[in-house]
Amino acid sequence: MTSFFNATFINKRCKTVKPESGPDRWRDDLGPAAAQPDYHRGVTERSEPNRVLQNPPVFPDVQLVTGLGLVWSLAQLKSFKEVVCVSGLDLQRLTGLSQAEVQEVLAAAAAACRSHSPVTALQLQRGEHHGYEFGLRLGVGCPVLDQLLRGGLPVGGVTELSGESGAGKTQLGLQLSLSVQYPQEHGGLNSGALYICTEDPFPIKRLQQLILEQPVLRSDVPPSLISGIRFSDQVYIEHTADLESLQVCLSCRAPLLLAQGLVRIIVIDSVAALFRCEFQADDWLERNKQLLAFSSSLRHLSHEFNTPVLCINQVTDVFNQSADSLGPSSSSVCPALGLAWANQVTVRLMMRRLQGMISRGAQTSALRRLEVVFAPHLAHDGRDVGVWREGVCGVLDAE
Image 1 (cartoon, helix red, strand yellow):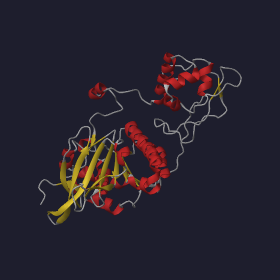
Image 2: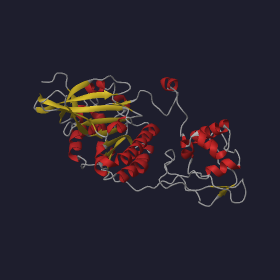
Image 3: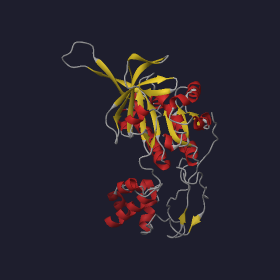
Image 4: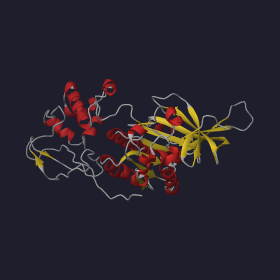
């Protein structure tokens, strides 16, 4: 288990204010303390609050100098992101600019908010974009499950794994935390894992058991390579008891580990725990706002560092009863957090616990099934699995 050190990021942001001694004097103010860090440098420099700049800020490709009226109107906005949120008609009314000039301002503000230029599908197919490794997958470590997922979890996206209690979700999350440490030729990413617990203590004993059983699970890997990997030293564990500490972890500590190449997967177990306990039914609007901000942070980390993110989710019961039926209503389960969260994930997997037991040698396990609910590159399919001492493995013929 690795302890983290505290890190505070302060990002320099430029805000336009009313000129004090002429139309050409600009002030460089500090943005809010919760600004996003500069992930390329690790830590940004803190600017001086009262330093006066002689030249206005320059947008990428466009210099925003369109007259004193525009400067005065932008003085009431805190950042370039807020400029983008203003409609073209409102900005035209506030500044008195023409429609073409307003479109130029909005395009410049949008370019300033982007950390990278847009990437076309043709560039991805040709491999011309070096920041994204096209087709890279993180393998599970089981040939049956890797075949179901066409190689494993995709990098650069958020994957949700939902299921009832005892279905084996945490088992699969631990297995991926070890699988990521293998070289790419063996389905890994040659790095560590950040495991964030939000409700239960981290199952350290089960992790140690999985590490000891790695030669059994990964019989395709040379034993000398397995013995040379220090699995326990590359699993970084964080416990977050509320949403505030979770956001601090995602905005400060996770970028440090990712930028230094220490981790290549983020596992959150579970995503629904904090949102269910901190919000009541009447607080759905605020909950959705926090949920969207949380998912935005996950997507940013995933695409910025080209790393897979696995979110373990709980389920909720759905009751169905026909109008002409007098018997008891049937129930099924669906992932928690509703449609607002479902629209934020790239791949949705579900683990179900079925009736019956399966055996393999001296071991027995309850029969489970891993299903693909939706994914842009996968068909709706599933495989029967069992949870053994060495980990989660698919079974071809369930007995």
